[in-house]
Length: 341
Image 1 (tube, rainbow, N blue to C red):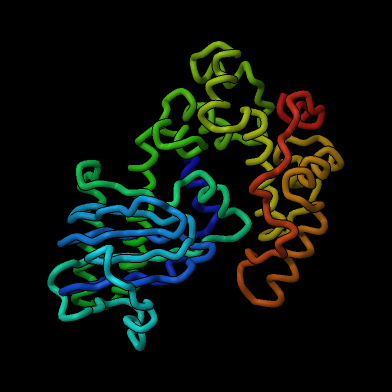
Image 2 (image 1 turned 30 degrees about the horizontal axis):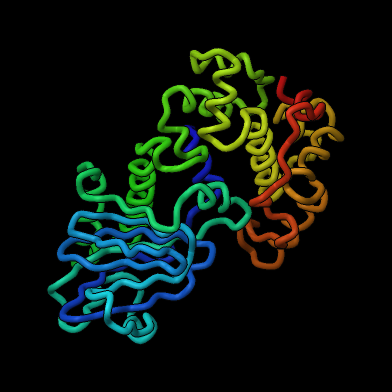
């Protein structure tokens, strides 16, 4: 798989709800905290204002625009910024999942939105590199995203057999396409692995690391793939991704290891070897540094989660979630070097 597919697969985004909203007249609706989720929406017709807690400037959404709200912060949609908002619960009370909600007769602003819950362990891998509001204007929107939005509206308006599954797949298409568009903005969009994928040279190095994480990658080998000198590549990668190449590789390996520990019966030594570590102790030390707990503790927590909720084992104690502000891996760290060179 490609890096974006890798990360999204690891986070297992689950579409909790997709619906249309048709508003008329003067209106303003406040939505609550969307903790550990990402909101994706598009304006089909009309326009409205979007404000997000902690963001100074409101966004004016016009027909054809799309947006992502990856921070989970409370937000407000309105026809007029001066209006006092009402709580979303009062507007959407007793409304079944899916379909189109009509507010005050509708006719002035029609939008479609989906909300995705992400596996808490890995959510920061994506959410940490996105701004609170990703505003994708109509001019940047190719036919693919518009088609997905229009098709979803058709499914919501006129439910057909199998419609629930169709809407689920369309919601994922909209999310991926929106991320692609934001990624295409390149370094101007921000710092992080997602924006680096829009850079041909940095994207080649990241794709190689994702394609074979167990390989004994060296800085020189990655620089050669990018067609750059070793020093120039190292500086450019750090500026674009926010981490050195070896730091990024080590963290990606540990995220893969955490997923295997939670969702497979593979032994620690098997996982370590599959990710390029020749000794379990070296792997365990690196894992604890990045993930905040030992592999055995992490594995036991995953087993308990699977037994208690019968789910896929994605729930974990906060203690073992990947740290958003993890300690930087030292350039001269012997363990990282042994695994990466």
